Length: 279
Image 1: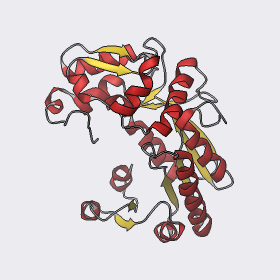
Image 2: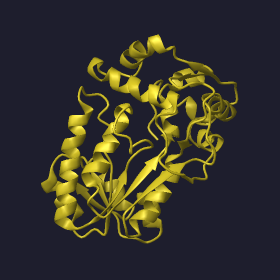
Image 3: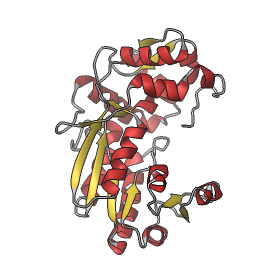
Image 4: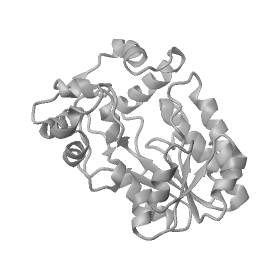
């Protein structure tokens, strides 16, 4: 998103949590601000003079109470946005309109509810295609583990398509909700086929049995025991169809085959530390 805006000649201020990558962004032509998303004062300084601000909730998935953390971050955003008058584009989620039964997507419901009175666009993507990259070692071995039913099509969307919508909305005005999916909805089996094409060998989708979810979340994904039930509620909601778009989503352009080829093709997989991928 930031690179696209810079390429179009727009002034961009990048907000970082530390100055580790500051010189990289300055070299690209951006201003740099360092702030804590829990601190309204530092956010206010960072937002001053901006026409539009893209805000998201840094995923608090490895703490016991992600909802308390989200409320703290959202309160800081609200204070800074109200103080500066900047328009917000908020990263939300499919299912954010639902008040219960959505697991960690409820964090997006909190943000939408708390920021609803502001001049803002709420972008609700489907499942990020990057979410399938949680176990690159398994992919390399021809397996795609899935908490989702293997034959249920669900909306998946690439980060590039989300970025394009965010850029459009940052340059516009008004308050709206934009729901977003990829060109088509994919089953887990089709996702596996897409990765298989990129890797040059078959990849088989394998469902993680429901009775093994808790163990898999704690040991395989590092989710704290106190948060496991929230994640289980998320996957149950996706598998039942409870978590869904409120309306008809816009469709992005990037297919799973294109995403897989760019992200985890044969030439890159060997350079990826097992279990970790930094897009």
